Length: 164
Ligand code: RP5
Image (cartoon, rainbow, N blue to C red; front, side, top):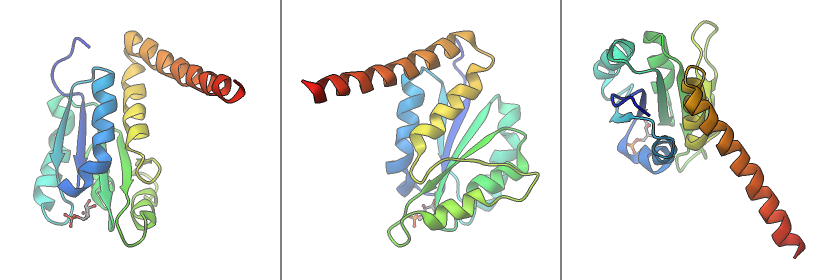
């Protein structure tokens, strides 16, 4: 991509979320999307979180990917203060396997959407961000199509292996 300033922010409630959220960074790297990473907590650093959300669009970011676990308020709170699309990633913790995180993120009130992916679904969160960016970038759209073809090819290779 010609752009060098971050277009996507990958944020998370704790550095302990990185084991899940690093998959989003891997996908963005694969597509050559400039991104930034930040730990922001809705509960431990609420003022920093709000300031980040309010400034995000003005800084040139286009999509925010927000991961959190447990009482996972980060994606929804960011969505409440930014006009940008927010993709929420429920991070699974030890106690409730991520169901708590999923419900905390997905049950947003009408008017404040968060595009919630599956528990631990940081890969799909990044792919959604790439697809959003691709709506105004033909080169990226081609790359997304190539990625989908690659998935189909992989299935066919596995089919061949099964039958050989
Ligand atoms: C949430 O609390 C974070 O997103 C994280 O998933 C969870 C636990 O945080 P740590 O206690 O590991 O820092 O806010």
